[in-house]
Each structure stands twice: as structure tokens, then as C-alpha cells.
Length: 168
Image 1 (tube, rainbow, N blue to C red):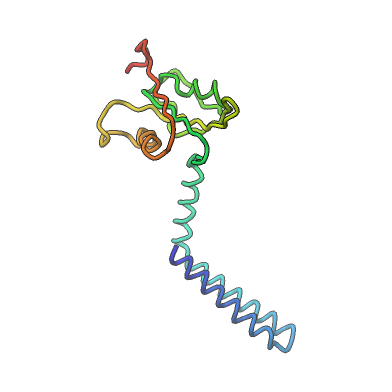
Image 2 (image 1 turned 30 degrees about the vertical axis):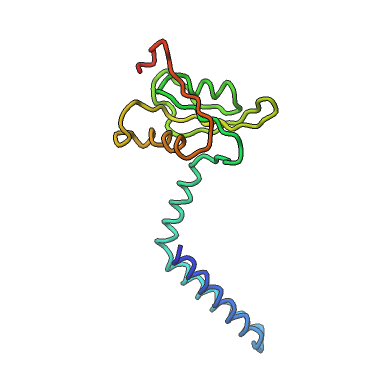
């Protein structure tokens, strides 16, 4: 970001210099020459930022895949073992539609849904299933659930399958 900020300042300086020079231009042709020279210098400045722009684009794409969680709204986090009905519950109570399959680990990221209960607006988070194992041994998918539990001010519903048909 420092390189992008420096390039922004450089482009602003080029623009100010050329606006000042345009005030003293004696013909339309000279104005067009100054404009073309300024745009060329600006384009060169931007071209030098190839790598930082590529990195920023990767960050932008990654951020666009993250769920949009409103921390000002009441939040309910659904967590539990894999294949215990978390996504089915979310589909039943919210306006969201999460894929439900008869096998474990269908949910691979956090899904956000919304519902109203007694005239109060809630957001509900469907999290990937978690297994009972040390934190260091958890997968990146399970760590999404752990991050939601650790960092969000929320009520937590922990789902368990008492029939033990989920395999856990």
C-alpha cells in the first residue's frame, strides 16, 4: 500500500504541474501536447506498480469471498459435529439456502442468513463441522468455526446427533 500511496502522490504532483503549465499555454496544440505528456507520465507511474496491483487484486478477490457479518446485529452461531443438521436448521429458520448433503463436511465456509424473532432481527451463521481434537490438528475449514466462536459476540447453538448416526 505504501507504493500505491507514493504513486498516487506522484500522479497528483504531475497533474498539478501540468495544470499550472496549461495556464500559460499559448495554443490549443500546446495544451494537447501537455495533456499527452502528463498522461504518459501518469501511465508510466501506474505501470511500475504491476506487482503491488497484482497483490491487491488477490487480496480483493479473497476479501470478496468472505462472508459479510454485521457486528451490530444480534448473531447466532450454529456449530457442532459434521453432519448433525446445522445447515438444515439454518435453511428452516432463515432466508438463506445452504447446500445439504447426506455426507459430512458439505459446509466448507461460513454462511450467513437472516431471520426475525419477536420483531428482533438476527443473523445466523452456519459454520463447518468441528471434530474433537487439539487446536493445532484442526483443518483450515474447522478453523473458520473456531474463529467465529472466538471473535464474534454471539449466542451459540451447539448441535449434537443423539442417535449417533452422524458418526461422532
